[in-house]
Length: 101
Image (cartoon, rainbow, N blue to C red; front, side, top):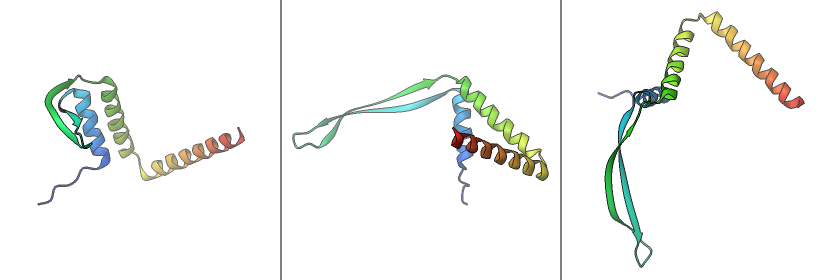
């Protein structure tokens, strides 16, 4: 049985949710020295756990992303087409204004 690979959007949302809730992560620190012949060699390795407190900005971004998704799922095909045309006109106006500046 094959697992479904999460999409980029799902990975971003999962990361935002973990950051919004706060998380503990394992960090590995490795110190290296150069031998006489120029080869890099590990001399010290340390593993530690670091706590990242909940992040309000991540929580806000996560809520905005899921709210937007819900808002678009409620739109009809005609509403989506109208919004698409409006955004295309807006982009066209922005590019015209940028060229004239």
